[in-house]
Image (cartoon, rainbow, N blue to C red; front, side):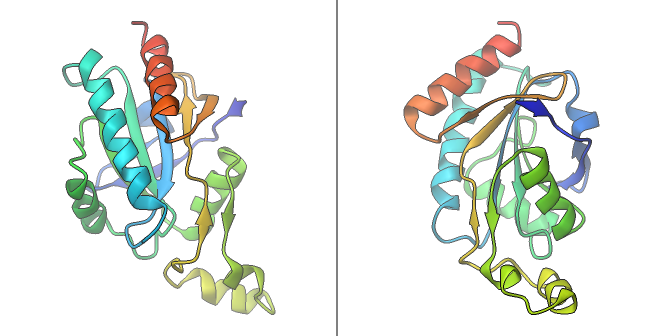
Length: 184
């Protein structure tokens, strides 16, 4: 479906994660934010389910596949908040990383132009001018932000191989695809 552009983020432990650190490993990526009250908790639960499935066939670190959750609220979601969010869903940092890009614009470009997923912020869309848009970008992501809730599958060379729903069937297919890409 395309090549993921080079990207670098900071994970919940304050370490770099991105296309360079994930090179050679297939991974599933999704997008959430820690204060999201609606679509993110079920997506986080689905990520935990995927983590459980991967552990069944990738039993030791370094794991043969990876999960990365990137926040769509980099202004608010610090590594500490991401760590707390991950702990809530029993994320194993050796398998499932929470990450934030350095700015909203970098994140938006990666999500929409790199992974071809939507982000809809009515406040930014309705900005009267560039200055107002820039000011809005510095504020936390509003709770009514709409974003994609699917997993994107990336192979070990950084190619997007598919888009999977968070349903049990979608997670099963994603797990099998990750296993296949890991050579198992």
